[in-house]
Length: 464
Image (tube, helix red, strand yellow):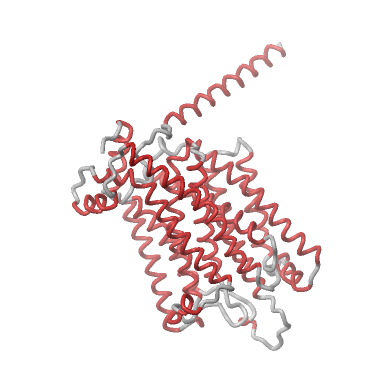
């Protein structure tokens, strides 16, 4: 496979990082391994002793496991939507970030459903779901949708990586296993015009499929709540609300991943401030839209003044209950990213990444607030019940498994970057050079500075 000079330089740059792990990388791997061992220890305890080691009881049957499930599935949809839309629109600045978005999609979709398994008490009966599941059940819809979505996401990621796999196949690696794996996965691709045409058509088809599929899957997940007659859940707005929240949090995770890989692999010439500004703008718009949906959801519940809904709202606005978390998740986590990204004075790579982290954590807290206060609000009044059967508090077992999920996400991301360049190295005709985008940005900054200087000098002359 013949590459141009730019692709060759990029291939040499990334392969040098793929075959070695720095001392800092070894320390990070050790920390992630310890966190995973902690999660394994918690998993063994839960399997041996049962769900009594968690905070879940007869009344609050779901906990942070379900919040984690919704969170991971949500950020996976954002990766699919962003990569699919940017590919179909042929956005020139998409190339350095599109693979990161695709990896987020696949890894999150693999980790998210694992928390459903942790929430189930009889895993030995899980085969009953495909054998005896009722098609009328939204849970069965969710299983079918997520499975289809995962398969589609893997195919999309694989098709988008074939060019790089073929380039790595022809690279002179010292380790023999790499050449064998790359040769098998490249499936004889040699970058001929005919192969490129078919590959581009396949990517276009998968992009067109993955976008509505991502919207549909998260809508199905929202319908599990919206079709349940419980206060705070039974709402017609939940499907679009969940979709917007998913893309909002997923965009934040994408920005954080860009920042981490940019810093770790020194990708300043590939992932530039342009990418952070554009994705930051998307994050700001989604944040404003999410804030509008949140306001509409709680306004209609408050104005209707139904007893069950009001009991949940009282808990959310009670300083002794969930007011602090609600303020952070629904107000601060939305307003702060919008203000920082909207004001040019505050907007830079680090600040965009920081508010993205705030938004991501706020959206996790919001998933928690969707689940727990509702389940702590019984439909019938309960008397003479112990508080631990009504109130939910996550135990160390649940927290260890939650942290292990995040650690597994980071570990899989890191391992993937050691197998395939985190930025596509083989350029295609419709792509543009990332360095050129950076030059254009610098020229605009210089022009802006010159205009500002001319205006200041003109004001001084007028004063004189």
